[in-house]
Length: 334
Ligand SMILES: C[S@@+](CC[C@H](N)C(=O)[O-])C[C@H]1O[C@@H](n2cnc3c(N)ncnc32)[C@H](O)[C@@H]1O
Image 1 (cartoon, rainbow, N blue to C red):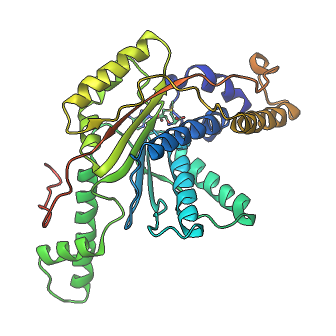
Image 2 (tube, rainbow, N blue to C red):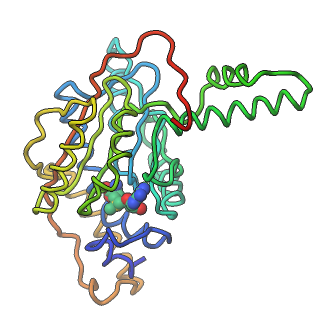
Image 3 (cartoon, rainbow, N blue to C red):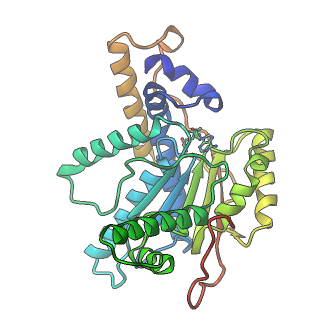
């Protein structure tokens, strides 16, 4: 893991995250900092009245999730809101996030999320219980060709097939339409739309907006009414200026509305307590690796004193009115 630290500091775009040491090194280097950034963004959105608050189901998707800073931050933010509403006798109960899905093609992330979530649950067992799910696996494995609605329809088809098979086994007749209706009534794990879609430090390569233009459009149509698409990344440099500009141009062709108030770069982790906690966590791990002689020469003297670079965020909202009446059946191939 020590040997994998240097590349996770300066050439993440070249990594594939196939092995657990690489994923762990990336996590040590970036998770807490990115968790802080997403939390800052959620706070701003909440203060501006844009954060979706749900009464029946709250779902979050993180694209290019890696160690899932967006999922963990959203999980904790909504858990705090739910607890606050409960303890302050607020009339409207805020739902915690119960569905959180990671999308990433690095094979090592599933196990990392599983063990990270298990550790967090154990570490927090002494604290007052905080509602909400934790991510335990990677739900979707590639953004190429991905569409929220298509995945939902596939899951429904799969559930309908299982229902038909069960009826067959007990020699009871069932039509495809009835099996499908039962599947719809039971519900499936993959929703037809998400309340929040977060992507952090994923669109980092020149041309990545063009490469994923179809999928980004699909993500834009995979939001619930009032749902948000949040894109976080670096602020500095011409390459990023071009990436942000390409993204805005693309999003103008969707039905989403860009949220104002995020035009300027944001200073990351300005809160001194957060900055201290993030540095301490990194320093503890560096010391531990150094203690077992596991740091390569190029980072042997590394201390966790790095500043936190400013970042940018662009947010789009689905302001289309909620659909009335029964939903039209979507097709898996359409
Ligand atoms: C720089 S990391 C960002 C991780 C995390 N979101 C963060 O803010 O630290 C980019 C992630 O995107 C993933 N990735 C790259 N291409 C992908 C694709 N086509 N589909 C899904 N994930 C992809 C990589 O495996 C990697 O985990």
